[in-house]
Image 1 (cartoon, one colour):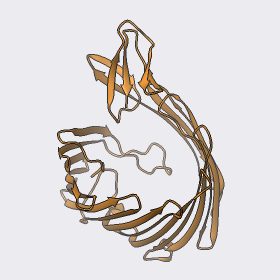
Image 2 (cartoon, rainbow, N blue to C red):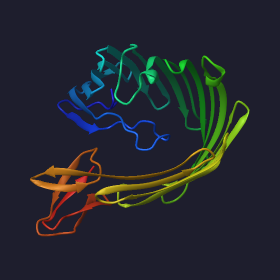
Image 3 (cartoon, rainbow, N blue to C red):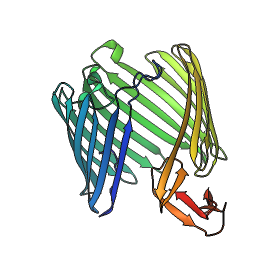
Length: 340
């Protein structure tokens, strides 16, 4: 199941994609795989039962799958999924997944178990990276005065890493009116010394005014220390700027990252830079969308939620939005697209 939200009875949710999977990210420039297409369709059969079908195809891999999301007793939700694949040499494989999740005000519990045959394939994931068996169990407890504690156990078995077991313990506590301190201990056990280790970390998060967030943290991993400090300003639903910056030190030396982002009515632009002891990178991005409705084409940001057409006949450049937010403006004919 790609989307864990239940749908109301009779409602549907679908998407189709066409592109090239990115390969060797951060190691090779402009390295893309074979052209692929993919689709997703979800339908709310009832308030307590949602079904899903998926499909993807390239010249090297074809895969189809089906799944269901359903309510269980004790305010729990279950998921079941199954898929079959076929590669370019005619080898067929299967995968499956079963999960149960329960969320409450104080207690949270989740369990996921999945498996895949040796010949199962998926677009964009190599055969050696496929986890043939995987299981994750987690439990969390929240208290208004004492904070939140969580514990999780995981196991993954793949050709590249072998069998890896993970144990994780997290404790988070509110400090004052805004700040939060998180303490984490992690133990990883793999088939070799290189894939095993223990790490403990502490992270302090302090929100400021105007959507500005400051964060500082330190980690000790097998006797080696790392630390960082960062700040960021998130975007809101309207137009405007956002930014982020991070500086710190890893095991291999110091590093720094920075980014700036601008959100307009019809597009989202991003620029990021990073520099470290072994690698430097520059990333630029521009994302937009288009909606064809009521016989008219509207430019928009990426469309991933609902939208509405607003009509104010005879009035151009009128701001429209939701509650106090101005999310769009009408065109010369008095029509405008209101996203989300």
